[in-house]
Length: 332
Image 1 (cartoon, rainbow, N blue to C red):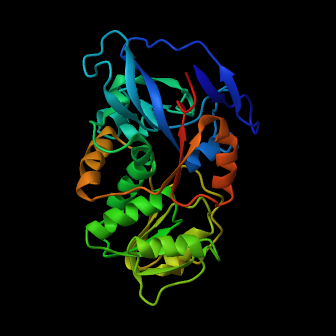
Image 2: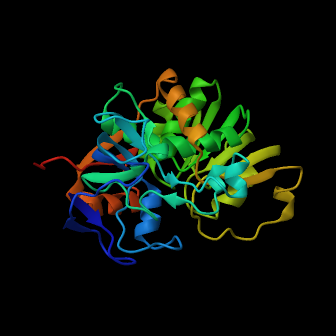
């Protein structure tokens, strides 16, 4: 197999040839056809997350087909198309797993972070955490749904029934959530980097009733806001934008420090909450809803060997929608 491997903190990814991995008990091997490039991959590559075990293969928005099955697997067959998300394993015995909060498991494994991911031609997955995808839709378009879509869905649920919804950071997750929100009859307000007219125009084309810079505010108060950009300074801005009793959801796994802010913008029962990972139920619910909502992902596909360039483009805001790597492109 070929893989783009992160050898050390802050190092560029290296293309390596490795022996094809073999699945263990309860595992499957997947031949990767598409792997989305997520902002969390940047946090891994930039060593902004704790506990990374090097070397590691990033990537956790994986679409591919089962090509080898380990022992004690009855849920998948050779040739099945599956999606592999960020949450790759839970212990099943800690308090959180027992109480239906497996996203908060005390002993989890995460795809592309604490177990090898999908920036490769093949990957190993726990069969319990490989979603059946069926045959509808193309692999590249589906890949961003496996994290941007799933975390977007969980954050949207946490925003409650907000009729006026603010989205801070209109990238991979934002453009998917905007489509679901519009399908649900909500009004979407998109906040982007200052001067990013391309993203603002993109948001309007997807039905946003307002689009502007993150330091601006629309004329009406929002019922809720979701922050996808990893910028802590957006938290006070979002709190100021929501009405009394409104909710601000921090949807990223990593965020820069939140600056101090006056209590009065939190007062009047505004809520500030975070999203952590996802559950399998989130995945099953969202993957059922996505085709009903008519979600169309905006994607740009790249060969696996260009992963470093793609990460740079994502870091500097040059990707409209989502980037997807095609590991099999040009391979034998």
